[in-house]
Length: 396
Image 1 (cartoon, rainbow, N blue to C red):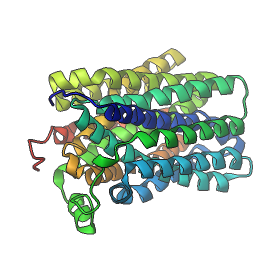
Image 2 (cartoon, helix red, strand yellow; image 1 turned 90 degrees about the vertical axis):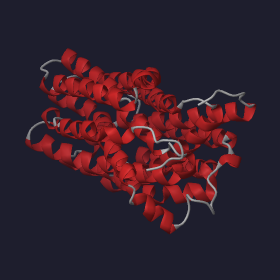
Image 3 (cartoon, helix red, strand yellow; image 1 turned 45 degrees about the vertical axis):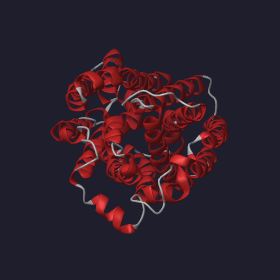
């Protein structure tokens, strides 16, 4: 793309998109950092925890098929503001509800997942709009912003655990901060560049047609594989380090923070590699890093091995999700519908991942159960050709 003069409105929109990505990452990692404590308070097994975590994916899966239509009709600005409020309410419900049993947590996490899924599509669509108007590639760095948020959320969670701050106070504070910041930031989104509700991104026929596009579905499978690797790391690294490496809770959260930091570094510096070597070559090499780190984590016998494995696993996983989103949004006029489809397929990883790892954790250990991630990474390598940029005009 050719660089052109950038208006103050576009710069403000770019900053607002960064806020949206960072805040979602911080909110999600804040919850993830307290999963072991919530698990202990509820007194549930790994497989039962997997089913509880499944409700997040359930909420997202319900939201995602319609998210493209919602964004197309109401715009990413109003959609994101509404989802930020729902996200804050859901996180607050979990923060208080875990004291009363599993049911309030399940209800809160379902709404948490619904808000997360719709928010994800809205900010990626606005990110694609901002990228086009900015005149240069920036989408991977938006996703780096998400990772920066996850690192900040995980480190804050580490501090909260170390200081024995209650889950309730911690998550309530995060909910308020995220809700207020994102509602304010969404005001700077670019309303004039929203999908046209009478155009190609709307209508049931267009939605169904998008679900029949071979490349879009393959990109979805690619995103599913990397989402599984990323989501499994976020959900289970802390639990595995505490249970299987016999490490203190703060150390488990710190390993999670390292995993997220590695993803952030990969996403921040990844655009240069993508520009130089292309999407397909880079993601295949990164998959090798991911597999190496995964094997170190699964078969390592010490906490330093867990740290080393989490580092490589995080770096190797870093570019898969943003590259898939960029591929889905290659044609801005179809971005909302295609991002919705790709996200819907990809989020199936969050639907199947928690119960699968929980089941394997009951019958093996959580640490050994994570070997299942390797199968999905291999699948991503096989279908990586689908993320090659579209030719001019967005032809299939």
